[in-house]
Amino acid sequence: MTKKVEFTSMDKGTRDDYDLISIHDSENERNLVSRVIEWLKMMDGESPYKISRLQHCLQTATRAEEDGADTETIVCALLHDIGDVISPSNHSQVSAALLRPYISEKNYWIVLNHGLFQGYYWMHHYDKDRNLRDEYKDHPYYQDCIDFCANWDQKSFDPEYKTKSLEYFVPMIEKIFSKEPKPFV
Image (cartoon, rainbow, N blue to C red):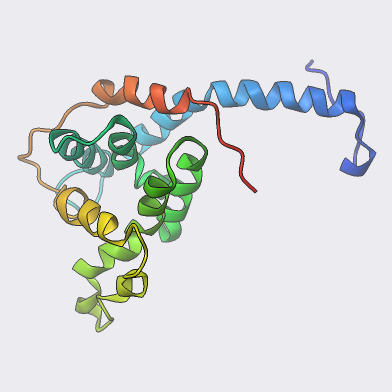
């Protein structure tokens, strides 16, 4: 049996209780890479696209690497849709939250907003404004997000495209998630 905290209400916790929680959280953090890989594997199933959601992510990352992107950006391209595993309707926000402690503000913003920016390619089919992304036109990463979507995300549904394997990207995932997480409030 694993040792448990003494409290039933956080305001009654002691330093020993919170040290115990900290040890547990650290172990949980060390297992993050394997969980991320498992979540990616969960995306390798049926989809309405010609390829699986995993293949889409691998293709997006492959395109980013072929265009000379750095490791962090490649991993962001790989994980940009991982939030679909948890919550498809706000997958961009889920994906961005997972990555945020390990990546730059620029890549965080791109992953966070890519879903809205992808709307450019489909919203007009539903009589909606495809240019909703333009509310961010003065943001310093606006064009970067457009480029991410145009060059990598929106075109990565091609079953004929030579895509690198998940195993190929694992060392990159390990590199990004081995960084000391940045605290934020």
